[in-house]
Length: 375
Image (cartoon, rainbow, N blue to C red; front, side, top):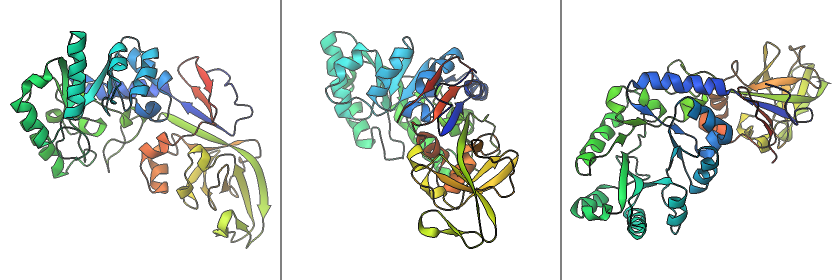
């Protein structure tokens, strides 16, 4: 990894380890045995940059990618000209020509979407690829019982469609003993019997660890690729992917009783050294971390004191001589994992990653591609 454009003046450095993402993909693929392994790169690869992450996964042999929106698919097509790209939120009304032109595969979630896509295929006089989502108990996206009844009674509605995949999504996969996992598997298998034969997909990151019954034909990991723990309460087998270092813009000495930050929510109980870091909630460093988070200075943990501001956060570095003005604190990384930071914020690792802001200098450790994103 060479010099990073913009790093000299940036308030923080975000490093994404593409090698670790590749290693995580290989680990998941080994767990899956003969089941194919796709990759979910929605929300700009969970905030880490799909334009860099997706080609790295393709180099590992990944051939199917899932995004949430059609615009994400169109952007991804520019860097993955040959991959199969699925759109989880389905087909926007009127977007059928553009979707077909760019060889995007919609995940059809309703009969309205199905009918529109089938009609476009008939107009083009060729079947168009689609995945069909079944609601197996999450009550979010996909055909419910009434939709399945209608489709089973009129299978001709699939004319004009090449059914590439039948899929559903688990609500509680990260909790391996949750009874809903088996119940959703049962419902999904019952739905498949009523549909034309097609490859099936149920497993997200966590469901890969539920065992072969859940693997079916294609798994769709997302969070685990980016280092998040796939199973609640168990050691994380995934490699850490993200390192975030915030620049210290000032270190000051304060006396006992002096308050720090908005609302005076923290006061020194004695003489303290306070480091102000150029990262705040405008950068996705959540306000809920106030008075709860920790960072690493040198080899020592330091506590966030006071409320996180828009552009800054303050840390007690009294016992960390390595914390000096112009230096860095590690806000997230191997010694301060995403999941731990999420617990301190009262949220999940998904939110931490997808909230990462655009003011960081970004580096991708395994490629010469270095980019400086602007807000």
